[in-house]
Image (cartoon, rainbow, N blue to C red; front, side, top):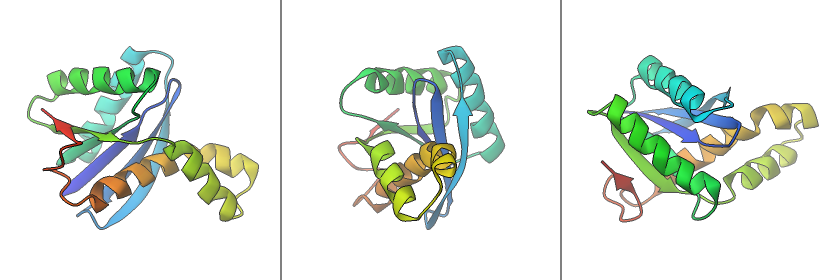
Length: 141
């Protein structure tokens, strides 16, 4: 089973993947200026990796909360057979930054990896949740 995770941001979106739900690997950081551009790039990632489940990190509050819901709805229309879930996340970017600092990564490298590292943490949390596909905090279509 392939899991693909997006950590949405207003201009940067981190991407991570897991094959068989065992090891999570950061993939890339998507840069976008508009929701339309973001949807186009996320769609490309889904077509390229053909995941069984797409996980979208959703903070409890703020503009990214609404963005995550809107992205899920739009991707569900483009990929009606695709399982897309929202997974609660808060402060994943700060946690990722802290872990990168602890790993002695340079400031430049931390900036480059922060978003995909954050997506990695979200996907790890999703996979470690007691029953990801049945969790009451997950929302799927």
